[in-house]
Length: 426
Image (cartoon, rainbow, N blue to C red):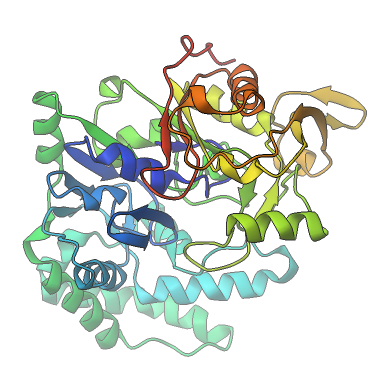
């Protein structure tokens, strides 16, 4: 499962739907900055670290080594699920995943504050600094909590530098004992659910199990291929799934790109089809476009085929899942971005960030259906114009639509037989 836009595409709903037939569900990157909203027979849930497959008690849910884990936040999320009657004994957390520690959260918020007008729009959950420590070889992996004395020494050593930075900018230093106590207490709550996950994945592959790899954010926020520096600190692409889950890349046989029927984004950076004013406010309110992690109003805009085609070129989607098609049901005509104009030239390639900031979207205008499609039970039952809208997405992105969301609930999902193989990207 890969987000094919700026994140917030509705991956939680699609993962929850597909997880009902999965044997293993793996979160392969990101941290508690993720916000996956799931609506099913149990209610409405906002998940951050726990894989969206947790509602299938027969599926093993894995937080992979490519993630960064805030252990107290994870325990809090598990307690929330337990309080609502959801079992979590089927969760496993990789002992090779890196820890998000309180000083990462403090440094994340400090960095965002000091950037001022050039802020990135992070969630302030410490994810970026945790990945930075991982790359700089200052990270602490989960297995290290098993040796309390060594763990406390590592935390105290890291805080020598971290506290100096915090104090230099006027923030209060953190107490090494308190930091270590909070993490060790959370680790004790998880107990033997912190494991080496490679044997689990290896065994599942050998048994030809159904493995669902759940990404966070989207291609336009990818560290290497997104709108840098307004990106996440890991790779949410399908290639990142192999590394972040510990599954050989050649075993990945199906790649589903998730797109909204329009575009949304949380955070800063260029967003070419963005709407403003009353039109944006009406769509945002009608579609409840507020971040699942922060509650911030999401930026909203029309569908951007350049961005989603860019995602297809990087992932070679075997199919697409289109969410929130029902939210476009009030429009008679719908703008649909098929290219950008930059400095007088038209392009369908995704330019680097500073060039993208100068892009003007080139729109087609598609016929709307101006009707309520909730309750439709199959793609054949959609209004002719709604089906034509899906076909246009297939044509310009280059992959067939196999799943259509027409409401937040798991049951409000249409399956569509792909109308042909995905067109090779490029």
